[in-house]
Length: 368
Image 1 (cartoon, rainbow, N blue to C red):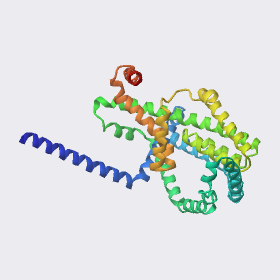
Image 2 (cartoon, helix red, strand yellow):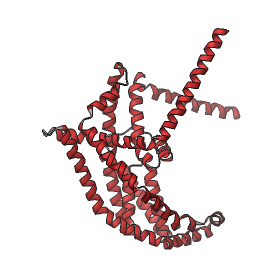
Image 3 (tube, one colour):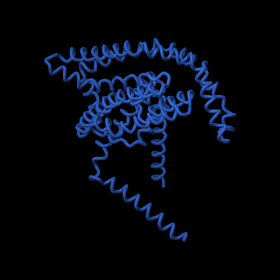
């Protein structure tokens, strides 16, 4: 009995210690979340640019100079894009802010017309003041908050650029430091995981970038033809939304439909058709052509990951959701999935589904 009691006491000690360590880890993440996000972004950019640096280095340029040339080139391209795209975005955004009351009134009029035809919507709309939801003060306060954080953004942006350059210039010590946390027999798996992760993240990023540009141009042209205001802004937003799968395009689509609805119900339907056509073209034409390799992530997993990351970390979390899911998938496969025989889990899942089906049939027979 005393031996069992001592064992139980030891187990209880371990449980308490585990809970305390878990709480400390959670608190540590809370206090350092900005730094963790910064280094996650730096590591992501490192994985994306490292193949380019290797390509430049093969042209008989030293690694340090290759890293500097690559980062400066990316910054120049980014600056040119900002100089080209920012003026029309600012102009249309200012017009958008000025026209919010007019758009709101048009939207309210259309919703009132629709709600009068459906009794339930009429009673629901009487409890909702849409004018307050889309009014100016929240937008102004949001812009003021963004302005107050400009210095912080500039500081972390500059720090991130220097960290990326240092990592690209001499990544070997960092990789060695990462590998030394694992036992010798696991080092090969970790190395393979990093290689696969770099490949999959590059595939996702450049595919999403290309598909986003095509989708953005298509949506902007389609909305402009229909006469939806601020078609250029919606095209930019739709292109950027490609980096937040499912949730991003859906949010931009809803916003565009509401703006079209402020004009007429027919315009909203036309915009809906345009967006559906764009999604069909992405799924059947340019998506398969550009995305040469399937990332093997289930849509439910992607939606869950994006929503969870956005809830915890905001927009940056949503942007980092896919790289994070890819990291989990690859290292799960390297350390755990390979222990199973080929198709073992698929066969077991099939057995579960068949058992569920048989159970349903038996239950129906008993009822009869």
